[in-house]
Length: 355
Image (cartoon, rainbow, N blue to C red):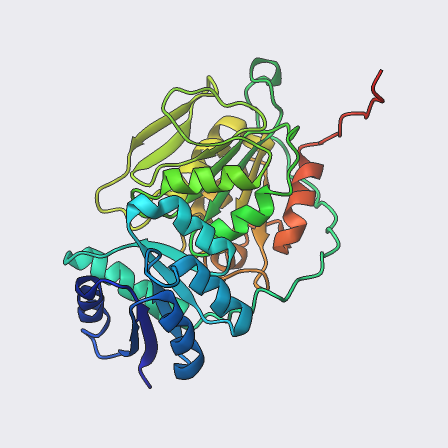
């Protein structure tokens, strides 16, 4: 099998040396070009036809954000942003214009190296489209019959009826941006999200998502009370649980855990507290995290939804859940907001003419 053709874009010779050493160590990745600024990256993308580009954001002449936008408006190429954690908010803006994933700049630690290699190998095979192409909105599917309910905590004591729990990994930030931006500010349910993410980037992701949607977005804090119409992101170094008093509880994730944070832990907790009022959504991502938690929601009588293959960057986690038989309905990404509004029984506020 031929080597994966990669272009690196970074103005730091040291950063490129570290990245080159990691990517070429196993012989299955070939560095076909090294750009020192965004303009060179755009030219190399056109001339060298790489299968993937690693992109720094802070570069002279043309920055990485502008380079990504230019590349994705001409001929789509899988792009992985390799960024300092201090650039986290800008890094997530790069996902808006076409990058597939954001990763921290690797050190010499073998765990960092293996994580980067796995992502490059996976994403080099992803088909991307130019940003000029648009998907037509799909027709929402009918709601399936819900299984028998299990006892849950009284509604009156919590201020909301249903709880939405979303699990996602690779491609998740882009999917969340599209999904959450379509929800109205009167959305009557809290939304908990477990997105696999590197330490140091969750605050930037919260700020970025908050700028795109009408609902408040924050990183979950221990002991805070769940509120309707609020979005809570699980920190990568913690597991998120919900107490019977409708408060969030964070605990350290297992040191050897494969996924950070754990989607299964969040989904299981929501199922145990809210039972038939739980809505589990599993989106794009690699691995099997979330399958067990979706099963828990299904067995509790809740609703389980999965993003379809056509709209997924990586048809992995969601495919595993579908194949396991724990998903009641498979939907296109743009169908999910309408389905959620139906399931939470959203009723728009009546418009009143000004007096």
